[in-house]
Image (cartoon, rainbow over the protein chains, first blue to last red):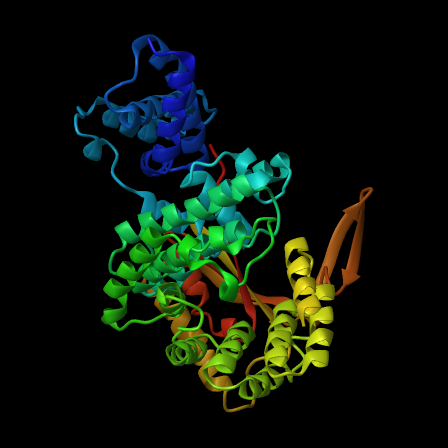
Length: 413
Length: 117
């Protein structure tokens, strides 16, 4: 018999690691996400008492899946429309009777189908993120609510409504048809990247949850990459997140202040993550199917592999930004491109680009524009104008760390 | 599963009768209807008379209240519908995107409720 604390740890570990895979397989057999989730939750509760008495089974995941299927049968039998669900019950009973020794046979991997369901464009973006964290990540509703500073009740409501919509609107549980596949993969990748950025940007919440989100996003990207090894953007996104995350520790100073790339201690960068990100890029880039994630990752890799700020390969980075802007002509990319041009060519050329980008008035309330402009102006020797830009940037920022960073910069001019 | 594809357009938007674009636009509808019939998806479908012909009815305290006009004055109005038998939402969205008015109006896709017997 296991001591209760060790048992609880073992169960939590199995549930966290295997949740997505068990749940995805269960949805495939019971056909309904809410029923699958409730049944799996029931099975986790039984596991607590069974494993306490009988010890851990050989394959905890297979045990949970079998138990969850039985719980699903119980739930279906209690359901008022019992008669109309005879077929489902018969099917589940048949699954239960099949002999199973090998876990891979017992738990077919249906996670890819499930992630396409959770990231379906018929769901609101925030719902996609929450649902993906709940179903594939195995995070609890409370953890997700905490990460997004929502009330647990509101988050629970959001998840319940989403599962109802999936069921009632007939959002399918399958890999999308070839004609819509590219846009649907893009939606999956954007959800994963949102999870990552929520963890990385530190707009809210405490540090522990933030790190969890970063790690969860990387874990999800690894799963998708394993399931879709031929998609170059999947690899690009995984590489991009690894390369960004490699700099996480160096990005914050002793007092929690933001440290810009230029001043980061490169010895503190995570070399294993940089090597892994770079290795993935070496696999995907030669396939000649570039996309925004691969290009951003390639830019990040050039920074990560440069021995010092002075040694940065600006012309190469500028060339990558040109490609990126051609694929994704957004003002944000234009601003970053201008900053690169200020190093690759001259601050004056960069200022002309920034003027052009801002001419439409769409950047009037965009903090990063003013921060970037101030940076370029300062290096052009136009200190007064730089200070004015920084003042505007500080007004537009709602993040304390960022405000401090900008004020310090203004003081140093 | 049955889906109702509700076609909303701003009256006066899109190709108008008497213009060169109107013929091909209407042929688009004929072709679409033919296609959903051939593919076994078609259950029903109609175009509606313009919104000036609408009458809104409500019964309050047993009294029938009849009013001129649509129930809500919005820029885009319901102009027609298709009721299709589709595999799932992806299938329904695929057909919704083929409706000629999708290019200037919007198609709302709503699953039809199924009653347990």
